[in-house]
Length: 222
Image (tube, rainbow, N blue to C red; front, side, top):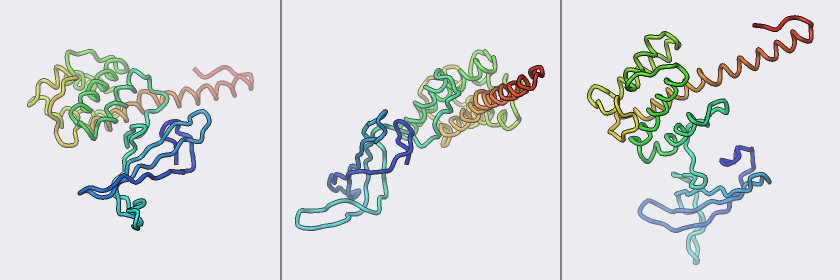
């Protein structure tokens, strides 16, 4: 497994502390400290399952885990932000991922703000609201068709016409349609790849090619 703090590959070595049972089942805490000397942070998981062993002292441990969540650090199931993405975009995305399960409304609000930042900063779109900015970037034909369709779906799923507050105040906490919060995160991930990851890959390849050309005494690639 990878440590959720430092992302270094480690061998799981959790100690279990049985908490007890309720109407939902039996609960335990699993904890370990990352062995990476540059990390050494607690990894703590809360899990529910069936009792593993019973004797006079009570129940010891659980098995057949049916629910588990990492409580330290708090993490999401979404992919990590690529290192090429600037923090001013990554921070909103990370927070939107983190709270998705607990509040889709708040997650969608942060995601819409992140989307608007990307369109304004990377696509140069500066309209009065997100709905118009989405239309402007679509009209510009600067994105591949699949990305244009994905961004347009943000507006269609969110139904800006029915909820005009979404189009004028992207940070407002308003009701979201089923699947809307997840979809916006999917779109942002695609935009991260388009605006940050792929250009960085191309830049690195170009630099490597220019080095080879320079070693061969040839002019660099323009």
